[in-house]
Image 1 (cartoon, helix red, strand yellow):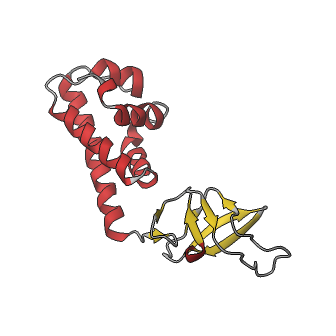
Image 2: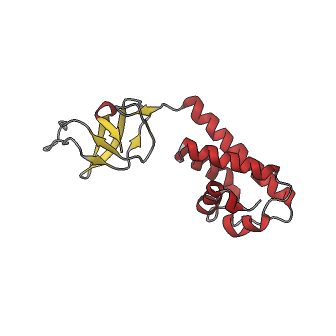
Image 3: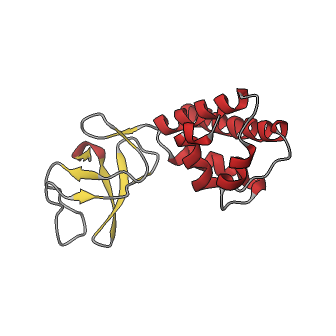
Length: 167
């Protein structure tokens, strides 16, 4: 099977692994799993498992796309199994201990999402207020399901998620 038939996996390999150290593949995969959406993680995991079952994995494409070179298919398959185990382990960690943060409409908020303020908010210690409709980019999850951290006009603020909607 060609990597072009596995677009999410191809994107993962060329984006995350091509410029990283080969010894850090497990850590890099775990980092990907912590930042990617659940849908993307599931697709990459499924595509990895498909390639593991392939009798002839595309070892030449691994070299050109991920900068990983293998002598035969067994070496490549072992590497893919390591990536799949790291991805599955990171998924289990995420499912077991992470707090799910939701906006006012119940949409799940992820690290780096953009949100919009749904009500005028007074900012404690600030001279200006946040107006309804203000767009806030690159939110930071702080482990509290009712709050997020963000930067607005150069100031770091903690906002309650009940006053935000995902954009």
